[in-house]
Image (tube, rainbow, N blue to C red; front, side):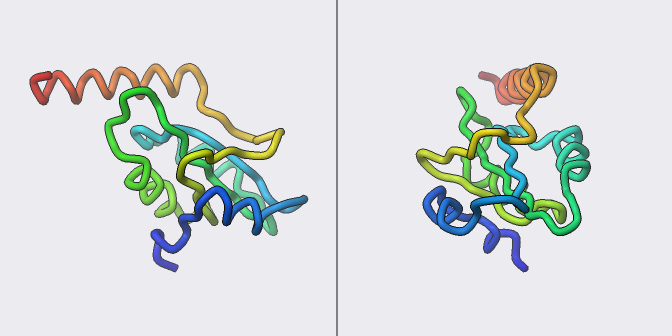
Length: 117
């Protein structure tokens, strides 16, 4: 399956994925870090679908669609939700840690400094 075909709107995901057997995760994935990929792989469970919701950070490096395509390219992720109003059911099993957010912030600062701004 092409990674772009794994991307859904929030409305499509709400219709398709309810109940047990679905693990929801969320994050900015800006940038997608090795720690994200490792944690997502740890959360993938046999017989369960892994649905990642791409949220918007302040001042993103990449547009949401690009970040969604990167996450969708990970073999362990079954579906990616992106778009305005994207949300997840209560009890998500993964959220970015403060350390993830710090690394992402540091990376964004590094990129901006290299770009001269």
